[in-house]
Length: 237
Ligand code: HEC
Ligand code: HEC
Image (tube, protein in one colour):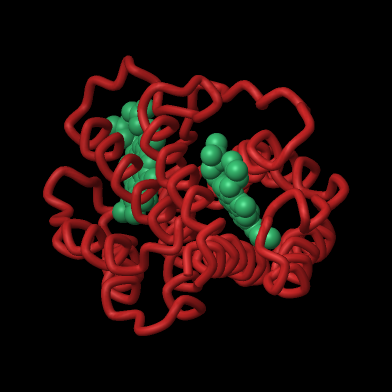
């Protein structure tokens, strides 16, 4: 593919490296967890998010590889009412590992997130995360993408906590106007495809604003993640 696309891909990879640990724009489990399950949860939280980020980047191989540790979770420290949910959690992680294409993988990641939320709801656990500060609404592609990532994180919380408020704020952040494709890609032949994908992100957000059903939210989230991955993959070609 044309040369201009390469630096764009480098920028995508660089941001994820930066945002994965240090950034106050990302939510974290609260630091005061004392129980064994709490510690396990923090590590699942990091691992599952890393899987999702790899998918957004378009790196399906890393997403699959990282899902492996989650398929092996033993429920030794969980109370009986939670233990039953481990089966679905592990099955969802297995589906991530086995997924052959981007769409199937995205759907499995959505299912994994919902399996976290199902267990929390079923166990009467209220998960609290440190609030994440929204990135400033500056012009340009990088700032637009940081808002996309922030929104994708809120939707993620919407599924894993689960939280209607987090879902709604993620949707709201995505329903802002789509970027003009020339801002995104200096590569002329790619314009129409890139433009269609950016519109798809915002169209999916519209759909997401109308549903409270978990199954429908999984579909919408999967559609979104696949669209992020598709565009980043296209630009890296
Ligand atoms: C099989 C049930 C189950 C599944 C599946 C599950 N959790 Fe949990 N989670 C719990 C329980 C129980 C707690 C409460 C732990 C405690 O307070 O000791 C918890 C607590 C948490 C916490 C709060 C930790 C703390 O102490 O502050 C976070 C964050 C969390 N889970 C994230 C996740 C994520 C992300 C996933 C999916 C990748 C997930 N959980 C899947 C049962 C589950
Ligand atoms: C239409 C194409 C397109 C879509 C769709 C898209 N992106 Fe991007 N993304 C880009 C481009 C182009 C860049 C490089 C921007 C730059 O120059 O910093 C980028 C970069 C990024 C970055 C790195 C930004 C930085 O600071 O370098 C993140 C994070 C990101 N995208 C998240 C997302 C998420 C999350 C989604 C889906 C909700 C998404 N993107 C959907 C084109 C897209």
